[in-house]
Amino acid sequence: MDINLIREIVMLLAFVSFAGIVWWAYGPSRRSRFDRAATSVLEDEEQDVATRAGIRNDERKG
Image (tube, rainbow, N blue to C red):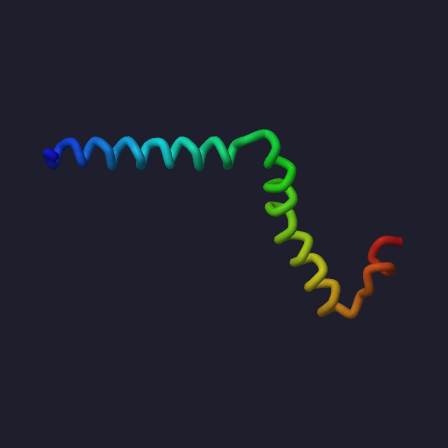
């Protein structure tokens, strides 16, 4: 087995892995999950600020 053949196989496996990860990350079925994860940081921060200020959740909403 030639070293170049091994390099080609490794490169092909790396490309297939990369393409699979991109497909997984940008798949439409995962969009809502990633959107929730992206906004959860902000929601947690708002709750922390309200907790430090002594405001309960029911007081904030109405």
